[in-house]
Length: 264
Image (tube, rainbow, N blue to C red; front, top):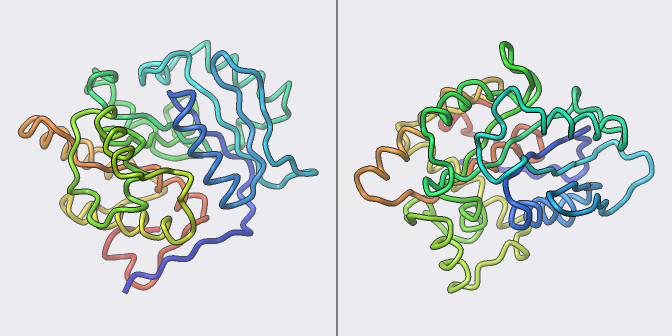
């Protein structure tokens, strides 16, 4: 039987999330890392001033959330003057050592906005490790949500959530609103369900085995599966890989049967 442990007192060092939205992803990450884990969280978002939440004295764990230049996955491709400038600002202005941070890129696979599957496949193969990507300009792990980040919230409250289908993030948001499913209600118990839902989904995707040292193979398997399903049915199966970052950071651990689903 799968056992899930949530590590509330773990030091995670510096963690950087690069997201496309200025509301949904930052609010969700603040709830997870701020309310659930009580880490200091900082944000520098498009059109907004720098903000710090739950400030700590000499924090051993810092979570920073920033945006790409525009809400499109092409803006994480290299070279990227905007991100380079922002990274320099994080280092010089906020003493946030980007070079030694775990980096996660959170993007939606809503084909109404991120329309270039060839580029996405390339990025999935390059952005495969949160701390080191040989042959690529910077570290970072690309984590997609199908069709949108709200699939993570759905998986916290819905059994067999992978068999819920949506064509766009807009319709997924409407479903959550209609069913009064809100990220503010996420807690330790719902987070355990989200992990189980992810493992169940990966098992259904040809028994996809994730490797936190190199996520590229599993990432591409998930992408190909979702693209084929979308091509045949005009909808995506609801799935967010945000949970992978929590496993990668050691905030969530799986034991007793983890090899059935993947390696950790």
